[in-house]
Image 1: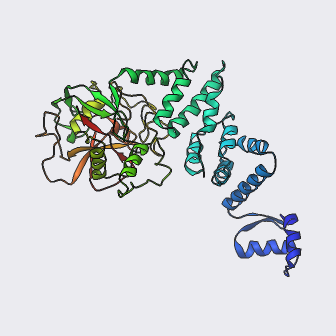
Image 2: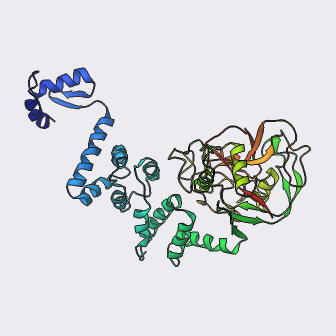
Length: 431
């Protein structure tokens, strides 16, 4: 540091003595430096040191061998000491170093274990592009399972960055891939084509699944859940359409574009919640109703919602008796998003009706007004709107909530005017 400062001090004709006297003055009066020994100094605040390191790395990258500089930095990917330096480097734009750095980072052996850092990068980088991840998937898979796993990691990022049509095109290009994980995802894509799925001809472009009519037992038996889930009772539900996914930010953005006077949702500018394929949050019940009306549909009734979530099952979760690990995005469900944020819709397996994210990710508004239990509830699947409780029923659990709340029968209430980062909604439509 002294070697850098000395010529500058001489040029400025600083009157306070030599360079060490200057450093002692900075240490004693500014709080920027601390003395490690008699003639050694360091930064008091690590953040300042990290910022300077990021700025110097940016300079070296643009003035020297960019690939070598970023490759050296990427070799520290996932190390806590370098995390903030990486984030500060990528937060600087015009031009951005996101693409070349992520291309180098994807080559690192520890990339898959540093999902938290990747999430922060996607939230905080000045510019985010799918290109480095697409580049990995364009490469021939070869015969190494380790390389397949890295391609699967790249594909998981693209779930978050690409629109639905682009994901479908990507799926077509990956047919025959040897990775079991990628093959399983392709199988789900093919299965969707065989189900009763249609894309709304409305500008919203929402994918709708035909839910067959039928009867089911709504609520929980004694010994499971809370008293508001009882008495369990038989309900008949007519066929209807329901959104394959919760409404996404991309779809809600079309609504805002068509209705420019409509207020943006809370968290619309928050990178943690505003990615294209994440479910829209920060919408009140009335906001959800207005979107549904614009899209030619409505909110599902509480009975319709539970019927569709269960999809013919009678276990606490549609997949079984226990929450398991990484089956959904709940507070402690073992996913990379658990307790942190919403996940891109479709990140987990669909239920037997072909619906995604009915358990976890976001709670979903329903039509129904809140009642403390099911005594007097309709038996025909219609909305229960009697009474004057200002709260509406929300279903499905969310990314931050306890595992028990992801059960098919779990129900909760929320004031209709409130907007939260853990509540979204799904579109329903009559036949």
